[in-house]
Length: 99
Image 1: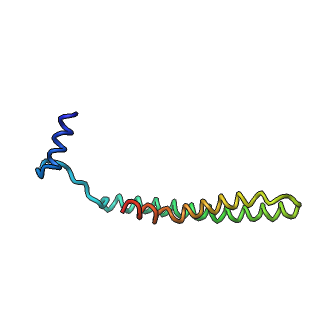
Image 2: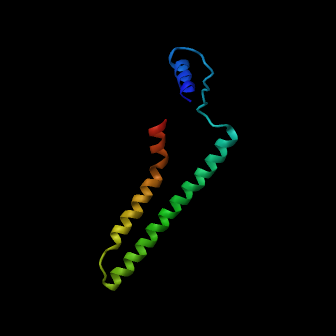
Image 3: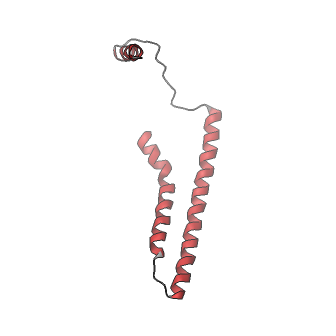
């Protein structure tokens, strides 16, 4: 293993051509289409879950206020909105960090 790593190091740093594979940056077309479809469905589901979470939290807040209970649901709303922000910024954040 050590000899293989040493040979790989010499091939890449000493200007030698070596037989070091250079992966492509683009995924094959069929794979890219499938991954984009899955990511699109996941993004849609995350957005739908965020909207449903805000609606449910709002309903719970309205019911608890009518009963005279405290506003403990504000922390839940903060968590739901934090999740919405995370879902909305996931793609641009990854693109910024790894592109």
